Amino acid sequence: MTLRVRRNIDEMPGYVPGEQPQESGWIKLNTNENPYPPSPHVVDAICRAARGPLNVYPDALATPFREAAADVLQVDPDWILPANGSDENLTIIIRTMCDPGDVTAFPWPTYVLYESLAQIQDCRTERLYLEADGTWDEAQAQRLREQARVFFVPRPNSPTGTVWSPEALSRLVPERGLLVLDEAYADFMAGPTGIGLLKTSEFSERLVITRTLSKSYSLAGLRFGFSIAAPAITRQMRKVKDSYNCDAIAIAAATAAIQDQDWMRASREKILATRRRLVEALPAAGFRVTPGEANFVWTQHESGAHREICERLRQHRILLRYMRFSGVGPQGGVLDGIRITVGTDEQVDALLDVIGACV
Image 1 (tube, rainbow, N blue to C red):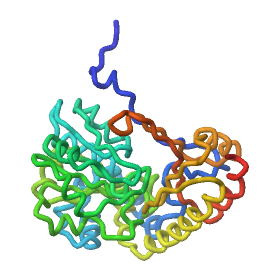
Image 2 (cartoon, rainbow, N blue to C red):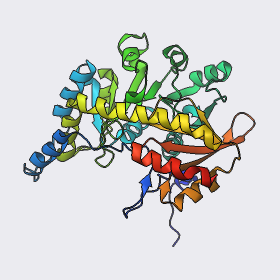
Image 3 (cartoon, rainbow, N blue to C red):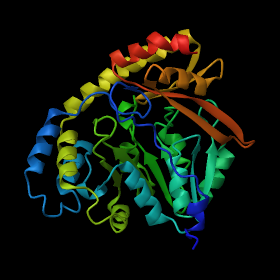
Image 4 (cartoon, rainbow, N blue to C red):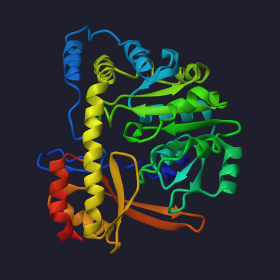
């Protein structure tokens, strides 16, 4: 008997996460993790939660976290929907909003999971093609605005680190759907986040912001994210989430993490200082760095041998993320390059010590 799966699942390639070696000794600069540990309060909270009543289900709405996050972001707790990583928030959004055949749109190149989630839901996908400087064609943007049920926009973008202005974003709000600002890297930005736009714009009820604790809060191994949206949207999204999508230990840890803003800011400042050093050093080895505002840099080498450079660095047990995007631009070109996570000073020094010999 031949196994039959849904047509769209059979045809999609599936999302491939970055390499995660299980043995020690690697310098991992490939998956945008924070190289510093989380707040000590997080570890204390995990220990307390582990001694708690783990035989009962957790708070289905993660109320302690919602209240703590609401205090930090200056919104009402009813605006916040916690999830098992912000990727689950993205899944909830598309399942809430899109019927099979509906259009989801996103800039391109970008986070490829948007396309995978649309394919799982059997949606049509449309790419807003980016120029080398991060701009787009306004006529194409207007056409997609008229069509899209969900328009995903990462801010900053991955892999380029590009940040689009509130004025540019306002021109992407779908006429009959949601603009989703994926702010996984927002804490590393120099300017204001989308929270101000959410609170003040005339389209605030057609805007959702997603955040993660994986990056600036050093909790990639825990899996916790959340969305911020008007209560009318959040109430609909609650219907779609798993009953108990965040476990008791994750809720306790995430609450402690977001309450310790001083620890997060100190970690962020170290990463930003190291990012400046990395950006300044790479051109000496023949790399061109795209200006960005995240905890990674997007770079291309004058030789174009990006895959080979990553393989040579791998021999030194240094992992970078080689990325290749097809279908770039209306003519269907190809873009490739290397995304480098900003690690500790020691990790970045180790990279810079050998990268010149690997190009």
